[in-house]
Image (cartoon, rainbow, N blue to C red; front, side):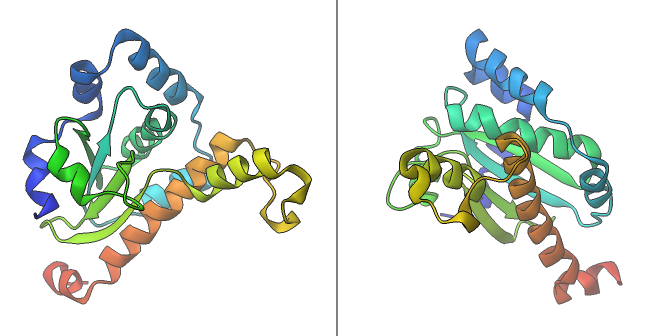
Length: 186
């Protein structure tokens, strides 16, 4: 299956929540969205993006990991027109779910980054490194190596930065692509 073939069926953030989210789900997503504040450095980085980047997000409106992370992508889109995120419901698109499994399981959110013309650039998903570190610290406590311990900033701020790193990585892949540099004459 070519996962980009799902792009026309994918929905914008608000459309996705309206179709799949109960009022409680929508409230959880909105609560996260209201807590996300990009710092000036993060905004400046996003504004430096030049290549159009299509991002397909496999998600579930009911999913706690999705409500805690997908609003981050909406904040990124607000800063730059180069990012276009669209959402597929995991249960309505079982074929995409099978294609995007992580460690043999159905996980969400999973993002697939594409070039403007539909070539896959990268995949990333489910939880970020900072979230996994926090989870490991919670079960390991003092046994956690100090270099992996949670930083002093909030976990949400760390997860925002983790996701921004992935978006940045995909953007630089696109910017440095010989094929796209030839297309754009840069």
